Image 1 (cartoon, each protein chain N blue to C red):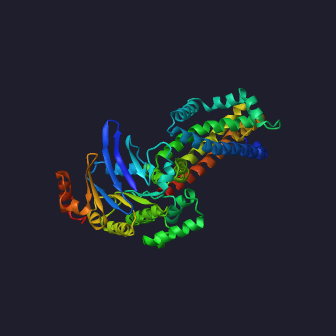
Image 2: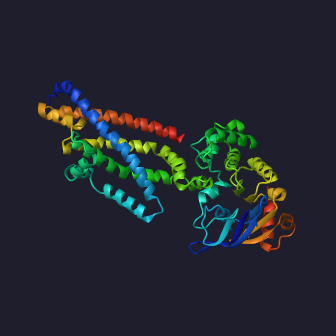
Image 3: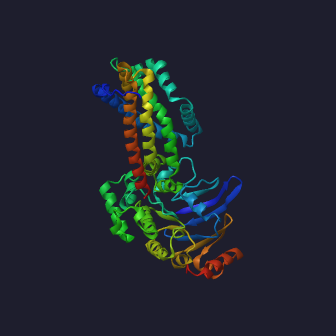
Length: 246
Length: 224
C-alpha cells in the first residue's frame, strides 16, 4: 500500500532523513517512534507530499508521490492525515469541517456529505456537537473530529502525526480508543506516537528512528521483547519507566 | 472677536449632501476595488513564483512611495485618453473616472500589505490540513486561509477605509466637487469660508469618530 524506498531529505546542510525505507501493507498498523528530532514527523509528512524529499521514491497504491506528473491533490484526497495540533478549521462548524473537502474535492452533494459527516461524528461519539465551532470543544474532542474529517474522504490509508502529544493526559484515551477501533476494523495506518500502550495493543510493526535513520523496523513482539540496538533499548526503558503511557 | 456668519450653510445643505454622496461613492469604489485588487496582489506577493512576487512588491512599494495627490494628478492629466478609451462613454465625467481609478489603484497597494499580513497570520498547519484533504493550493487559500485572514483583518481594513474617506478630499485638485470641494467653493463664494470649513470639519469628525467607535467595538468582539 505504502512503500518508502531509500528516502533522503536535507534542510540546507542538515541531513534530516537518511535513506529511509519501509513498507506498510494493506490493513497493517505501523507505529513510528523515536526521540524528538529523529525525523519521524518529517518522514510521515513526506508520505503524502506535505514535505518534499530530494532522493528516493514513495509509492502509494502504485502512484509515485514525488514524480512530476503525479496529481498530488488527488493522491492526498485518498490518504487521511491527523495532525498533532488538530488543525480543524476554526471558521467552520464541526459538520462543515467534515463536509467542505467532500464537497469541494470529491464533488459530493451537500446532503450526501452531511449524512456521511453525521454518521462519522456518531462513530467518534460526537454526534451532538455537529453545529458547534471547534473552539467550543475540548482538545480530545477536536482530535476526534479531525479523525472523522479525514475518514469522511474514504481514505485508503491514514497517517497520524503525534495525534495525542498536544492533549491533556485525561483526553488521550478517548482519542486512542477511536484509533484502536479504526485499526481493528482493518484500516491501514502509519502512526507517529510515543504511546507504547497503543503500539502493544494494535501495531503489527514498530519502527524506531534516530537521527534521521530507521534504526529498527520489526514486528511488535520482537521490538518490545528485545530491541536490537542500544539506542532503542534506552529509548524504550526511558519511555516505559515514565509509566503513564502504558 | 471674529463674528461668525452661519447664514450661508442652510442654503448650501443640498449641495453639501450631493458632495457627501460623491465622497462616499469614491470611498466605496476605492474600498471594494482596492480590497479585491489588494487580495490578488497579496497572494501574488506570497506566491512561489519570483516573477509574480517581485512584480507585486514593485507595485506596492511604487504606489506607497509617491504622494496620493500626485497619483491623482497623473491619472487626471496624463492618462485620461487611456481611461476614456477603456471605459468609453462620452457622457462620463473624466474627473470622476480618474479619481475612481487613482484611488482604487493607490488603495490596493495599502490593502495588499494589510492582507498579506493577515494571510501570514494564519498558521501553516491550516494550509497543511487543507492540502492533506486533497484541496489544491488555490482552494486552500480561498476556502481556508482567506476567510480566517479577513476575519482578523476587518478592524484594519475599516480603519484604512476611514483614512481613505478623509483622503478623498484631495480630489479638489482635479476640480471634482465632493464634500470638501463643495464646502470650500460655497464658502469662497459667500465670503464665509471659515464657517463652512468648520462645519465640514465637524461633519468629517462626527462620521470618522463614529466609524472608529464601531471598529473598536468590533475589535473587542473579535478578540473575545
